[in-house]
Image 1 (cartoon, rainbow, N blue to C red):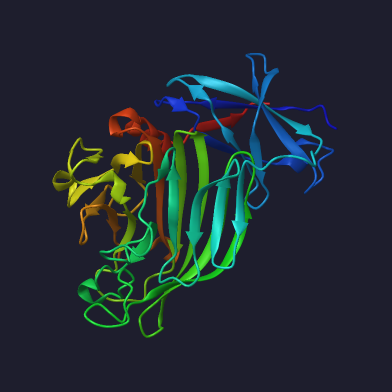
Image 2: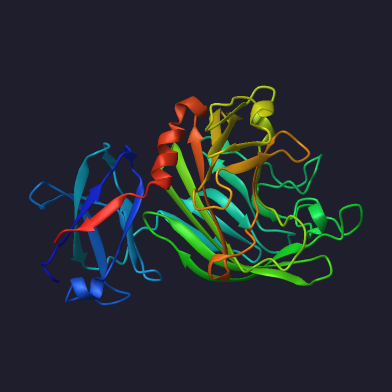
Length: 376
């Protein structure tokens, strides 16, 4: 085993960092002379001002993108922290805190042997996450609701009700007035990631019209990680070819909220522009929006963060059919960079109401990428 350590400095910048997910481009074959791909592992440790390791922390190397991930810990704005990376011997009994079980029609995403979310991808009109568990229970509605049964969980949709003649991959009907509807069809999983820091997957899908014509090809990526049990995150990204379709071609990230939150009567709704209440945030632009209310034996919330790289940022928050729904709309520009349309979001699941969850700081964590520097 090599005695060589890599020393990394993390700079908080202008934002307070509170266990943010960070990464560096890793070059273990160059760093460690005894590195054996697929067998060797790296250990990240907090380091003192002299660069000496003082406390080991969990880390995860993703061989598919050659990045090393860990959590930053608490770093105040304007400050920095040092971390040491060393080569360690592989442990056969290493525990995967975040793991994925692939079933015939869905994925089970587990954290500490408890279900965090199920991703349903086969036998459905469009893939969706349900349930999605916050600290005290599921925050989104499941299948078979009395009203609008196609509003299920957390999902990407396309075309709305066919505005301007776009394909409708929103409703789930074969018949008029909105059908025959299109579908998002799972093609394959490119990769899975599991470990002590996060779980994730990369999936390829196609969007088709009601007659089966292909609109676009999509690659979607999901990464699930926890700052702590009361602060849970899903990073979602969607990259598509140009939509071969007419009309508005709107893409919508949607969460149909668990009825227990009782939106809008009792549950709390607030956005980044300090607008409070369902009627106030309806058809407004905002960087983030949060719905919170009773879940299980506690109060939980779900926020969606809109990334500044998304076209039309800040996004437009709509209400389609019912108020107990978060719907964030984006449209592709007329000309795409390198022929690809890209959208990315962060979903934040938290304990307590909006005011308890420090949402604006977590949004800034998301959009202001933490700076890392290898100094030795």
